[in-house]
Image (cartoon, rainbow, N blue to C red; front, side, top):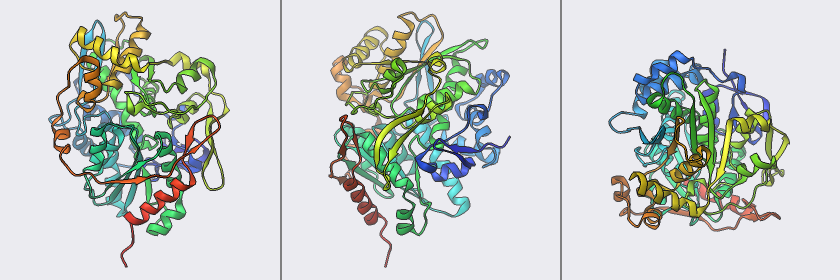
Length: 486
């Protein structure tokens, strides 16, 4: 069967993986996705055989069915071996207590789980651009770790420039420096607003083909490396396959707890379940940004202003990947826009998903700011393990689902090195974690930061979206970055 990705807002659009990766955003501001019955299935014998495979080898088995029309298997094998070398990209599973484990996705170049998908995205994009002799500008909105991981993965590539938008004053100093100390082809822009404002600016830029034509004489120059990109989403389906290969016996069911912000890692885990991995329940762990948690309880999707929380990468009130999730369960959601592309109303559900089926697969819990710190302390005092805020959210939500019992096979994702959040760790347990080597080096490097000082637009419900003034300012910056030589 030939796989063709469609837009969540346009069923008539069909694209190969290569085209979907190059485009970034699908038509009508939709995201590229497969229909549920098109998702490739991996059989139980293959899943069992992963016990002896490396991370890169498992990734090959999981990802090739999605890419086989766009790249030869032997070439993909080389790319994945470069993405995830054993010596420089260790992935570990540790037993904490009973039958409960942690998947440690923390040892990549920027000490974040985002490195896994960012490296795959960058190398696949560079491969396609080299073959086609084209150039791309990769646009990214970040609430924390995405920006640094993507910047590191794309830094120095000849065929790519990277523009990153991050919310002012809501990411840590160390997260910011991973973006702003590189220079070269990496342009980091501080935005007056929250992550949702940054994300709406990126989506509008991606759809502005006239701007791309004016700046580059190429209407297809922009693409995205957020998890709105199918090239960022699919690699996240590898995590649970790898975890399962290290802890499961005899096809036993697995409970997976995922710290969730823009829902990329959540969707990757749901994709893995639909590929045949025996996941009995997915715990969607959120912080005090409770939009999805409340949706599961009430059936009403109400986007409120995003809140700052210690798990900064999860400070998202309107996750982009929710459109993929809701479609997978038979529904549809979109943002209403004016003729200029500005968002008028967010999160309009015009076709309700199967809530019963969704709740059968997914349990969600919202973790308070106070419980971030209590959980970090409790896990450290009890097990001697230092969790960072995002991993603490996943652990606390999993414990609540398990009701304190650890007899069922379960795993929580730990998504960053605690050294990225020294003040939060000190507040929780009274000591500072070790500073990772590369972060220590960046602390003394000069930063290059661009700023958009214009204010966002505030809606009647208190939520914010990007304003026309902000969009004009970012267009002005792009004109500076990519000014054509005379």
